[in-house]
Each structure stands twice: as structure tokens, then as C-alpha cells.
Image (cartoon, rainbow, N blue to C red; front, side, top):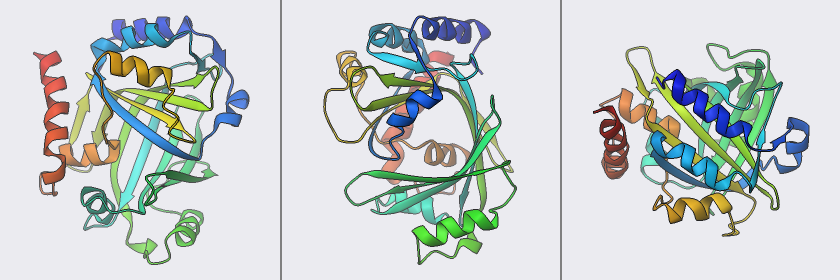
Length: 260
């Protein structure tokens, strides 16, 4: 878990940025988009925020700029979605419930990666995160994946994190930055307090993202990382991981270097 001192410094850095409301951000919702992801150590976050503070506004909801997210991911008992990701299959899914803990707003969400590397996101609102897929969620899934037996999906992993959402002041772009990640299933729990996962979201690969440029200048380069996949790699030793070994090594290196 991150120290209160560090979280306080992050909040201070975010308070130095101009804010944007949820209603204002609706025009940059980007449900169909290209995602570019990055990982780096928490000790570099404050520097990055300082470098981009004039290029972005930060989402503020009811006075909160650093929000807690709770997630429950579903997969089959033989890890169909995990294995499709490992095998780099196109047109793959991720299925989850997500709760915005500060507001209580909850959605069932499906993320679909197509064969052009574009992410499409579908969601419906719900009152709470249930223990199993409800009927409304099953209907959404049936419409998105005709060959999938939705009754085979079971809850696999819970993960939680704090997120800040940045909206470009000039172009159609958002960036999310997640910190204090934790993962758990019925047997294990693990936290990654030193890891930052950043994601730049654009309707096209414009190549003009200020935060992407700054990260490159800091020798932080794009990677392919999924919090669900990462959590399963850390929680479940029995899963395939050949294609993730280098990535997992880099993540553990960040954690161990800062934990020593």
C-alpha cells in the first residue's frame, strides 16, 4: 500500500492542474479507441505530472481528483479470455463489473479488442457488483459474442486501484493513470504499491500526445499490459506465461527495486 505521504503529494500535484467535470468529459468518452499503455515506477509519477500539467485538465467529481475503483473480472474455469490474450488472438474480450467507489456508480462492462488493434467498450449501469453475472449482463454478452456460452463465465479476480483521469486541453484524447494496484482471488492476494499503469486513449493514433512525448523523453516506452492479465499471472502459477515472461520480469523489477 502506498504511504499517506506519497498519496498526499499526488493529490497536491493534481490540485495544481485545471479541472474538468464529468459532464464536460462526456465529449471525450472514447468508447471506441486506440489504447497505448505504459508502466513505470511510482517514484517517477510526480515528475511526470509536473511535466504535463499545462497540457491536460484533471477529472474532478464531487471534489475528488484521485478516485478509487473496484473491479470484478469474469472468465471461464479454463481461462478462455486469459489464454486468448496470451496467444494474441484478435477479437478477444474482457468482462467485468466496475464500481466507482467514491460515488457508488457501478457498470457492467465488456472490452472488445478487434483485429485492427482497436478497443471497443460496451457498458450498462447497475446498482452494485453482484457475485455472478446477472441476466442483463448475459444479454449484453450474447449480443457481442454469439459463440460464447455466457453460463460458463465465473468470477475470477477482484482488483482495486486509485485512478486519475487527464483530458487533453486541445485534442480528442484522455489519459488514465492507475496507482496502488491490488489483486485477489479466493486463495491469494497481492499488492503492487510501486507500480504505475498509464493508458493513453485516442480515437486515432495521432502521435501528438503530450504525455506520450514526455514519457518517451523519460525513456518510458509503450507496452502491452492488462491489469486482469497481470493479476492472474501473479495470483495463479498454473497459467501459461511464456509470452508474458519479459513483461512480468520488468514489473517485478520495478517492485523489488523500490521495495528494497
